[in-house]
Image (tube, rainbow, N blue to C red; front, side, top):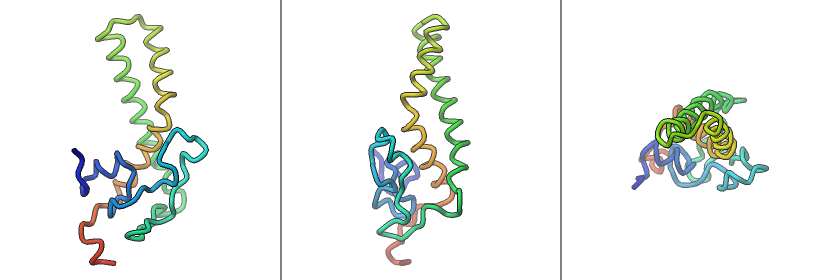
Length: 128
């Protein structure tokens, strides 16, 4: 079970990295593609500003690249090495898997990236 206060909680739930009290995103469902990247400007609880500097989330592209490579490798190992599918269906599966998981990967990349710069503060109520 995920507990508030861990980086993993904030990354997997998309909550504020400082207080873990509310979602950073206006729409929680990443598959509503029009709202995929729409975020609150600040947390309504601890007033943490999510856009630390202009174009801050461009760095999340590198995280997204790593996640996508990991997903591709995982699909390859499962379908080709473990199950034994031929190479062509395996690569079709990789392409379909990466495209299907793109919204989740994009959100996870942003969550990981912002959690690299903002730490959980269990005393945020006292500091405000």
